[in-house]
Length: 481
Image (tube, rainbow, N blue to C red; front, side, top):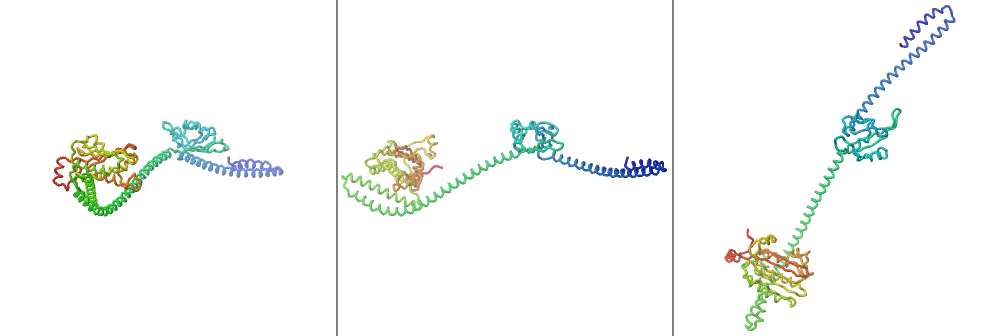
């Protein structure tokens, strides 16, 4: 019943009372006064009721708005990209969103309600979770979640204490963020960095090799300039030596014609002088041809007589402290296609080196033999291509060659002799001449025991010999194609 209806209900009995007390003025006055007060009370009650209705309507609107906000925040909580779990202070789950449930392999948050959060932590991290995070000694960290039917999931976890409210006890809010993809990217980045480091190392090595090659090319260029300069100097020296040798050679020939036949020792000495001067003249002619760009001439060379002539010259040039031994095979020796002056230069250069390696004396051996190489030796010596070779060996009992420099002895300008005692061109020239003749050289040395150089020249076959006799000035022994 509304206030107006209540007033109407009171007004009717009052009207009857007024009729009843019309004769009594005092009672009528009292009744009228009571009725007015009653009216005032009822009006106040009506006003209060209207205010209460208005407040109740406002409260309903506020409650509806709060419910909408609660639903909105619940939706945001459930659909948040990160996992969120609310637990009490003992770690029992009170609320969990859909993302956190999916992280643990559950289709709905319902299955996790009222479960200990510790059960969702992988057993390897449970102790750390209890001692650090659940005890609030640390606010955040990283650990593994236990996932149903799948490998553990790495997550970054952070705990935020929620203060108590009027109706709720204090809570703990846990935020979970999947960092497994971050770890995978880190692993891929490490692999990429390692690959990049390897590529940088490879490129650095390539650049270093290019730099070394450039240095080698620069050295070769400078060496070529030195050789070119030496060629120009040699050309002038060759002309001067030719002018020096010509009168000496003429004088030696005249002396031989004037000596009596009975003076054999003088005659032999003059023959050695004449042969040496003639070889010097031939060497000068070769130097002139080389500096002018003309190749030296090659012809079939009788090995035995040529070696005997060389041995005679060498024997007269050795000091008394060095004994000379000629070891030549008694078997017939074949002919080689060679420039006699160059072969003489090779043997003489090797013998001079052998002499210098024995400053306190020793024995120098010149050996000559003809060799046939088999497949086994060909594998060890790739330069071997002919069937037979003439071997000329020069050995000494000197100081030997150190192992750390033996691979450099044929490099131009390399020498182990004191400054001013050697140019470093002797063995380099020997190696070049041997290769031009289609041969090769081997070195055997032990420090303190001596050194042996073995030079091999291909022996001419009958067909090659016939060809050389038809064109002796043009014949040059080359490797078959």
